[in-house]
Amino acid sequence: MAQYSVRRYVMCPPAHFAVEYAINPWMDTSRPVHRGRAVAQWERLRETYEALGHQVDLLEPIPGLPDMVFTANGAMVIGDRALGARFRESVREPEAPAHREFLTGLGIDVRLPQAVNEGQGDFAWTGRHILAGSGFRTSREAHVEVEQTFGVPVLALELVDPRFYHLDTALCVLDSDVIAYYPPAFSEASRRILAEGYPDAILAGDDDAQVLGLNAVSDGEHVVLAAQAEKLCARIAEAGFTPIPVDVSELLRGGGGAKCATLELHDHNRPRAHTAGPRAGAGQ
Ligand code: ARG
Image (spheres, rainbow, N blue to C red):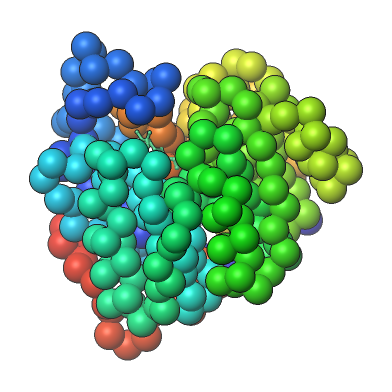
C-alpha cells in the first residue's frame, strides 16, 4: 500500500542551463534551449514538491556550469552521510565541490570519492539496499565505495543503451518494495536480477522510456513524472500510487527530467531550527 513520507530535496535553478556540449545522446548543441521555459518548468516542479509537503533546499547556480540544474548527480546522501560525486566528464566536475560544500553546510558528513560516480544518477536507495548502475558514467569501483560509505548492500546493475546512460533514466524506486523500470536499458544478467528481486515491478514500454518517464520522483505515494509518459502514469495509478504529471520538456534537451533535477536527502530529518544553505529565491 502506498505510504507517504515527507521528503527533503536539493534543487538548483536553471539560471545558466544550456546545451553547450553533448555528453549524452539527448543533447544537440545546434538546437538552443529556451531558458525562460526551462526556468518556468523548474519553478513548477519546485512548487509541486512544496505543495506535496516536501522541503526544497536551493543550491546556488554557478555561471559556466550549464548542467548544474541536474542536482541528482551531485552526491549520494542517506541520513547524515554522503558520498560526493566524481564526474566522468571534466565539464561537470566543478559541480562536485559546490555540492560537497553545500551538504557539509547542512551538517552532513561528506566522503570524498576515489572512483567516478554521478551520485543519484546511478545510485537509488530503496530503504533496504542501494541499486547501483554502471556502464556509461558511474564505475564499478564506485559501487564498492558506496557500499562502504553507507554500510548497506548494493545491487549492481549494468546499463547497455546510451540513451539510458544513468540508472535514473531507466529505473525508479516508488517505495521500498515497488520499482518501475525499462528492461531493454539493462544487460541480460541485470534483467534477471531485477526480475528475481522485483517480480511485481512496473515495466515501462518504449514510448514512456523515450520521454524519460522513469526519471520520476516518488514520496511513497505521489509520483512526479513527465506528463508525456501517459501509459506509465496509468500503470502507476493502477499500482496504487498517485501520478503527478509535470512538463519538463526543456530539461529533456539536456538529457534529464524531474528526478535528474532533484537530489534527495534520504532519511534526513526535517530541518533543525536553523535552515542551512542558501534559500535564494525561495519566495517565502
Ligand atoms: N546533461 C547531463 C549529463 O549528461 C544530464 C544529467 C542528467 N542527470 C541524471 N540524473 N540522469 O550529465
